Structure formats: C-alpha cells, structure tokens
Length: 382
Image (cartoon, rainbow, N blue to C red):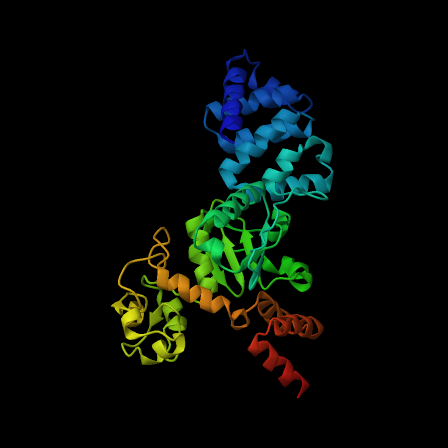
C-alpha cells in the first residue's frame, strides 16, 4: 500500500506542474476527456481539497482511465475506509458505471470483492487430534494475510501448538456482505448472519472472523479479530473461548453479567473461599495463590485471580502461565461444555420466528453435546 500511495502522490505532483488551461475550459473538457479530469484532481489535491479531488478522479475513471480509478480507490480508502470504498465500487459495478474489466485481481482482493474461487489458507490439524475445531473467515486480503501469519505462529508456539485445537481452511466472504466496522476505539461489529450457511453446513463449533479494524472480542461462539491482529491478541481471545475472564476492571455493563454469585471461571473467584474451586479443578491449596483483581470493581465486588503474577488475561501481551495452560487442556478435554456458534444462530432464528431454522441450528448444537441445546430440543418436543 505504501509504495502505491507514494506513486500516487508522485503522479499528482507531476500532473500539477504541467501548464493548465483556464478552469472553465478545463472543467468543460473534463466532461469527456479523462486527462482533463485528472488535471483537475491534481489541482484539488495540491490545494488539499480531498473530496473534490476524489470527485474528479472518479470522473476520469468513469471515462475509462484505469489508473485514475486505482488512485480514486486509494484516496477514498484514506478518507473513508476500505468498507465504504468497497461499497462504492460495488455500486458502480452493479449500475454499469464501471465494468469488471477495469478491476485487477489485486484491487478485488484488497477491497474484499471476491469473485468465484479465491486463494485461501490451508487449515491445521493437531497431530494428537481435534477436541475443538474452528472455522476462520476473512473478508479482505489483509485478513487473509494476517490469518496465514497467525496460523504459522500458532503452530510454532510451544504452548498453543500442544492444545488439541484444529483450524479448517480459511473461507472468504465479500466485505460488502460481512460489512465489518472500522472504528479503532470500539469493538469490531460484523453482519454475522451472512455466515448462516457456513455455520449450518460446517463441521466446526467456533468461528474466527479476521476482518475490520477495532477491538477484538469473543461472544456467542464467534472470536472476532481485527485484520491486523497479532498472535498475542488471538491467544488472549482464545482463552475467552475457554471461559477465562479479563483480570482488569470491566465496564459496569459487562461486570453485571460476569460478576454474578454462583458463576465459575477457570482463572477467577468471586469469593475468597476457594474450596469449591479446588474441588472442581482437582487442585490443592498450594497450587493457587488468590490475588485481588479489579475485574468487578465497577460493582464494588471483590474478585481474585488464582495466581500471583500478571498475565495475558490482565494484558494480552503477557505470558500464558503454566497453571492457565494446564486448565486450558482440562477444559478442552470436555469441549461439549463450550457453547457452539450454532446455538447462537438458533437464537437469531428464534428472534425471526424461523422455527425450522431454529430446529436445525439447535440440532447442530446438540450434536456437539451442548447440554442447553439438548434441553431446548427436549422441551420443544414436550
């Protein structure tokens, strides 16, 4: 991207230095001549009138200038983001204002307008077997490249590579359909409903979506990563898949859900009485070291992690402690206790009162051994 932008600005500066006709004459010429529209764009860009520059670059593109189209797309990405750029481009293709022949495969991949079969990333099957299988999904080339790196790093990591976790080959979906947000200070949000067919037919219980820009999250069987994520962030969010809780202060809304009496977490106690925790995990008192954390501080409620040192659940760049790694292995020995993504899609179907789809997704969740799904099906028969 950097080299293309460098070439773009060099092109604009050279164009701006050429002798220019009068404005009225140039604007009249720009209605039929792409070179005139490009000159107007150069003038506007030199004056830092970016929106006007974008309009004239688009005019040149509509007149058939392929280079102007590439420059327009690059400028729009800088001004409005990749999703807005992809949506505009798709609208031009749908209306016939631009033809598919004007687009290179690189532009399509960069913006996530996939066409037919696309290059993908192979999966990973843990040699010791798959207790948990995840389906990665990307919507743009950046997400595809990031996932390829993450998968290689996962396999090279001494701890993560030992977990009985498998990843299916990456699937791509058009960015205009998934429509993941690009706001750096908020959670990435996507239209997960467009993945219903994948969830319905796929042999996996969790989704990994690598798309958009913003904060990562895990909810309802969907591990959401921005498309510039690193391994440490993936590892932190994967621990959420297994039920581990953040050890920093949660928002009041999140704390109200997490910090409820009777809730049990592998790394966190909501009481200083550890007897039930030790019995559940078959640990001895010497194996843990209760340490106050701020997780539930918004509710003025105490919370204790089970080790002394700060770790990846406090700050994702930190290490995965040995006790947490051992607990992760124990959790993965009973993956049926983890909520599958099909259960969430059954909930979405229920909201739409689509009962055949609810039945289908609930059946899929039940087949993963998830008790709540089995009970829901039994109740529907009753």
